[in-house]
Amino acid sequence: MNIPVSQLPSGGYGYAFSDIQVSPMNFLQITRYLENLPENDPLERYLYEIKSLIDEDKRILDCYIMDVDFLIFYKKLITISDNATFNISISCPVCHESIRKTISLDKDIHFKQIDRNVMEGAIIELGGHKYETIVPTVRQFFKVFEKYLKYRKIEDLEIIKTIALIKDFDIRGNQVEDDVLGAQHSDITLLLALKELYNNRLEPIEVYCPKCNDGKGPEERRGITVSVETLIVDFFREICNNCPLDGSKILFKQVRKG
Ligand SMILES: [Zn+2]
Image (spheres, helix red, strand yellow):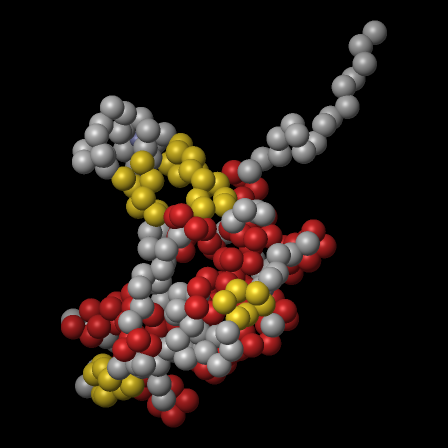
């Protein structure tokens, strides 16, 4: 399956190729995937997810991390669903009712519009130092990621992704790391804005509790915001819980009486 890069969160800006290959997994591949997926190690897990994509198309190395995060999710989605929809269930924070919703890739999943200027990078000042920001490709991200995979000084993937947004990590790695980890006051706001700009590209989904909103008009309704990122982490587990086999797919033999 070929996905036009124009449909990725980056809008395809700056790509030297027009599409990328991502196919659904078959049963054998899923079994292998689940068997080999590192448990309880978010960094190894992320590496494994990216490598699975590279196995299919080497050009993943030249894709932006923001796009690859989406492709990880997309590959799983097309694996389990032939119409790009999936079910989720969340608990209403007010009445604790379990709400089920079908999420459709076309209708419910939207990327925040990205500005070309944003993709060109920026000059920032952090911890009294001037830096240039980049939108890292997998190749660029790996230079930063490999260091943390090996030495484990930081094990938070979000922080590593934020560090990777700063150019010159290979030259001034320790300084960049100190400036990010030790950020205070306005520097924190800056880092959060960067993270929002480059890494959180998916719009959250609004879900309405039928019980709490019973009989209310559209203006009075209060929605629950679900972040798509949290759904993606344990995607397959979520799917198994929410899409149980129905009678049309499996027929159990009836025990004959008498
Ligand atoms: Zn409710």
